[in-house]
Every structure is written in structure tokens, then in C-alpha cells.
Image (cartoon, rainbow, N blue to C red; front, side, top):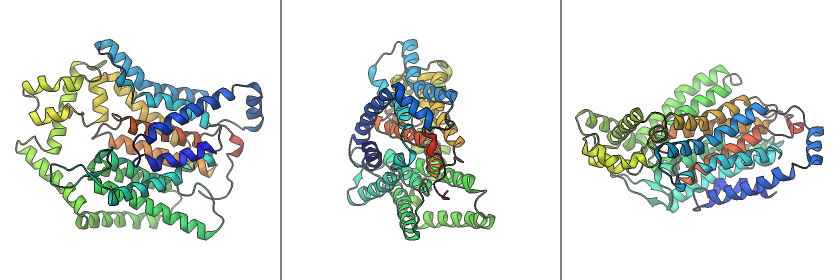
Length: 431
């Protein structure tokens, strides 16, 4: 099936081939429009009605999802209207969310086991990202003397975050299909562990600390999902084991030791009045974003308005020249970027992009079909991960990252909420 092949391919190509995820996104969008048009015919609808049990997706939930995906483009339009700052490029990245809606509704008509070919794609994608970082590294450099590895077209922050996401989602998708042979289960588990380690190592080589903040969140999510199905002594033994591994990683891996150690150095320098450190610059930009929001609370200053205010704020002594230079690139926070440039409307829109899919995934964690349960676990990890990443970087300023998040969310939601509910029966006892 062509769609299954595309779903297998895009996680592999996201970090290795420039423009691949956007190209596959639009191919799937066009195919999805064709599927939706085909299913408008009465005989197709009758077939679905006769072979489907209760649809797991209510009409209200479907509308909430659609409106949430449309929220950011609408917020951009309202802000442009209020500030008279018009420009089509500002719709480029945010349009991916709206265009993902037809993909979700169309892929719901495909059995989830076909959609879950995205999970082996995540495994291969994490391995490919690690291989690229090791054998074909692109060193973006860093002001702290440490190599920052990315790809030729993805900066280290986004490279590390997506590589980590690929590895983590591979692990959360484990068990989506039952393998009758023990040997196959062992081989599959080995590849999942390798993918998790590969994604983590690629993230380490990138030096992206913002992504590492999500690791405790992923661990807490794992505990929350399995706390009733795993014996208590395993969980009790797991906590100190994880702590020991964290300490060993800090001590033995130079990249982690150096980057984590810099946090204390940066905070100390900031306390002594040196604001031109990595953390100090972020503090300045976040403070500037809050000041801008306080002055333009409803619709913000418009897309691009934050960058234009860097010079006046520097001249007013609110920013150092170095921080102003960084601010002309980005706010270094997805949430504060939307808050300052789109106001409270934009804040509500970006939160809808996180909260609505997260809520929908949470509702399907205990679905009867193993593929739907795995998709819900993967989707919840994806949403939580990107929310944490967005605390310290603008995650959706690039069309590539917006397309990856929107497409992956749509695919996993479609697997979690299949319209062909007749298959939503457990084919075996796997979790």
C-alpha cells in the first residue's frame, strides 16, 4: 500500500533528506483528499455503516480537533488584521496544522495496523539520525567551545529534539502487534532498544539541553502508563536505577557533563551581572516577550513584530546588543513567541495544538486494539515532548518541524481512532 510505504519512509527521511517530510506531507494531503472524496459516495458510506461498531471518535471531538488545528492560522490572520502587518509567508508553517486535518480524517478509514508502519519507520529514522551524526556530522559550532552536531539543513536543536523523539516514540510503540514466535519478539525488542539509544546519542551529540529536559517527562509518562500493570518492586527498583544511569551519564559522557555544567556557570554569571550567556540571553528575550505581551495583550504585535522591536528595546536598555541579535532570529520559546506576537489569541491557539491531541490520545490509552493503544502512547509522548521542547526554542518556526509534528499527530490519532471499528478487537493478548 502506497500510504503505508510513505508512513514508513518519512521518519527515516526527515533528518536525512532536505524537504522530504514536507514533500511526503503534501503527497499524503492530496491522497487524503482523494480518499475523502471517494467516501462521499453513498455506497461507500453504507459499507462503513454496516461493518463498523460504535465510532470511537464523537462528532464533538472531531470538531474540537479540526478547530484546534485551524486555530493558529486564524490567530495569525486576526493578528495581521489588528496590526495591519500582512504577509503570506507567516502562514507557511502554521498551515501544516490545518492541512493535517484532512489527513487525519482520511487515514481513519484505513486499518490501524497499516498506519502503524510508522513505528518501524521511527526505529529506522532514529538509527539513520545517529548514523548521520556519527559518520556524516555537520558541526554547527557553539560559543562554549563544544561541537554541536546537526545535519546540513537542520540546526542542532531541532536535529537533537527530533532524533530523541524518533527513539522515544519507537519505544512507546513497542507491542503494537503480536508476534507468535519468541525469537521475533526478542529481535523486535532489540531494534527498539537500539533505536532508543541511537536517538538519545544523536541528541547528546547535538548538545541540545532543551530536549534533555523532556527525558524526565518521558519517564513519568512511562510510569503513569504502566503503574497498574507492572509489579511494584520493579518500579521501586527502577527509580534508583534510572538515577544511577543519569549520574553515570553525567560523569562519563563529556557532552552531557559539559553542557549541564554550563547551566550552573551561566546562572552564576547572570547573578553577577553578566547577561550575555546562553541562559542569560534567553532570560532577556523571555522578559522582553512578556513586556511586549503586557503592552499588546489581545492580538500581540503581529508576526515579525518581535524582531522589529529588538532595536528599540536595545536602545532603551532593555536588552544587551547580543541578546537583541539573538532576538532578531527567534524568541527561544514557542509559547512566548505566540504570546508576544499573537497575544492571548495566539496563546490559546498554540495550547490547543498541544492540549487537544494530548486529550484525544489520553482517551485511547486503554483501547481494545493493541495498535490503537500503542498509537495513543506514542502520540502522548510526541505531544508532551514537543511541548517541553517549545519551552526553550521555537519548535514550529520551521515548516519541517511543523510538518513532522502535524503529520505524526494526524497519523497516530487516525490509528488510535479507526473508523473501521470492526477491527478494534484485540487480535491477541499483546499490550
